[in-house]
Length: 66
Image (cartoon, rainbow, N blue to C red; front, side, top):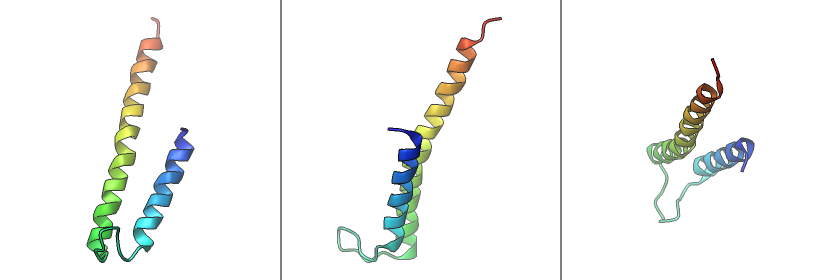
């Protein structure tokens, strides 16, 4: 899966969270609940991003020969 696909899923998930009025459990979505759901989606995007950046830094340092 490419980063572009991941971003597309993130955008689609965020769109669904903001337009729905009732979630799967039957709870009416208020602004606060939508915000919590968006933060959870954001965390699922940021955590792998941080891991990729750390991996890139480690690989770039390993690849240098002095």
